[in-house]
Length: 424
Image 1 (tube, one colour):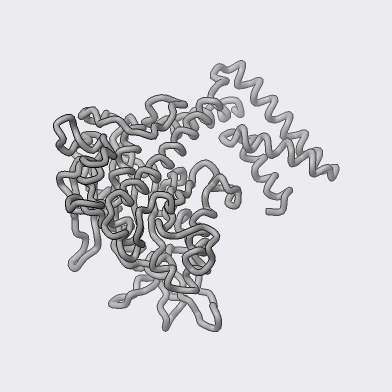
Image 2 (cartoon, helix red, strand yellow):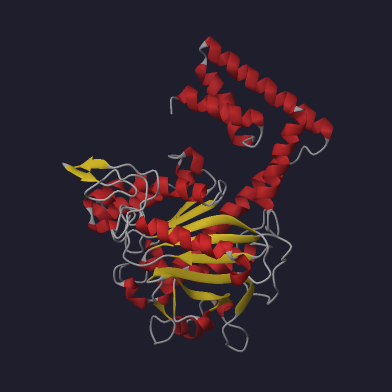
């Protein structure tokens, strides 16, 4: 039974990490090729990536208009060659659907619902850099689903469920679905009042509405999986001392809650810092920037985010201006940051695929049985060390099991014991 369970864990890891990945271990390209005009394999579930944030995610990059425009970047500077074909016309990805919705009077408004192409949009955000990268590395249908609106803060408008009210400098700051008059709230939406988390509710509900009518937004699609989230936001929080101080805590809860709300516990998450923000600079903007960088799984601060959360430091990709000023409409800022976010997601997928392939090496019963015996023996040894008080030896073994075999029962038990042994 344990042997079959071990093989089941290995198989599950392969399925999660390899879905759509065309070549395990393939490098993520720095320069994308032109799309091949081929439709996706519709026998596979649509891989949905949900884009959230405020006006910088919404996108104000200008298409035409000389310096700073996308046309100038592509035609004069020869950047982003995958956006145009040999004749100089905008390309169209037949495997990536570009959907953008926004809350408005009377409910959800649909702004984009087409294959990914510049020719059907008036301004751009990071979705084109994101969509082309994710589309290139995914051998399955992809949907880029953007649901957001400008001038929204994480500490108030986008405050996620599970956020509790707290006191800040003698003032009570409302929790999710709370109001200044009732910071705690009663868990329900507050009619005719802009309550804490209202934009979170609106944006996630709109995204779920799109997914409930999947074939309307991805023709021919029958199934989908929420594969990841992209978040580019923070300007409004920089104008508030309490929001900037609380930003990291709110962002951690935001990541966890999105995965829960979309029933996607393994969905990857990529967050980009404000283009003009500099790490370690202090002040509200520095605090927000540092908080966005802190959740990167490679930092080690949040162990559960290792290998599935990535932060993009956007300052090197910013061509002037600020988020509040929409970066002056400079399309290169939106494209360069979008590409960086897309590469970050592609690298998460690549690394997960490589790890799953490595974990899948014992494929026959004999090898699986030997592996299970070895893992169990090492786990037992670690437990004995703990009982004898030799925590250093125990932690060494537990750490190795948890890191190398995270999808086995022994690796998962080791991770729990390691957390208890380190007091974290």
